[in-house]
Length: 243
View 1 (cartoon, rainbow, N blue to C red):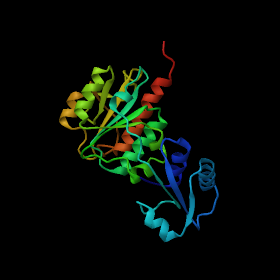
View 2: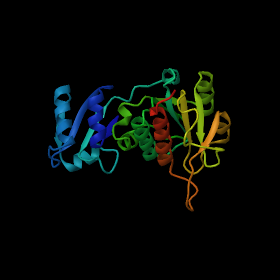
View 3: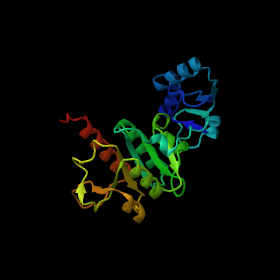
View 4: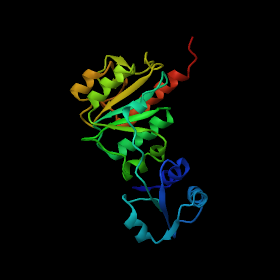
């Protein structure tokens, strides 16, 4: 699998979750800041480092802006849904049909920074954690466990059976996300596809549906922005002292 972008490659080397075969760095990139860290990490990990020209780097890259560095590595380790189910601290994000890999990567980054313990995505009609999503995640893909499931509604049923509150986000939700009453419990935030939102069956499988209060003429937020707000609201509530 190709991994590109400075932060993504640095975290690939730092995490050590998968074998890295080579790191290619642009001859014109210099060795300051994050690139210097990448060179040092590759050296200390015994990963071959190759200096290449701009055209060679572009030929290895999967996106148009690899930021001067491209690595090749094993695929991310697979995680089952059962492995994401833990104790009361379980905090999952479930994506129902999010198809833009940039959105997927941005959600992963926000989820990890807010303390989420895992991500659940569908196998079909959904973006996968490939080079584009991994770059957008800025390294979060190396630290956040991701379970790919055959169907989101069935996965939600499993989570509910395991005692995890499933909370769908939708503009028409009857209660607001601020002060979410189940945030301190084991929880899974469920977000729908770009444009279409939660599917009918997914919404039915959620324990409750919450909305993000909004002002102004626009009716909705980008899914990655909505995920960031909801994830950090859960984190805020969990950080408060509770009797």
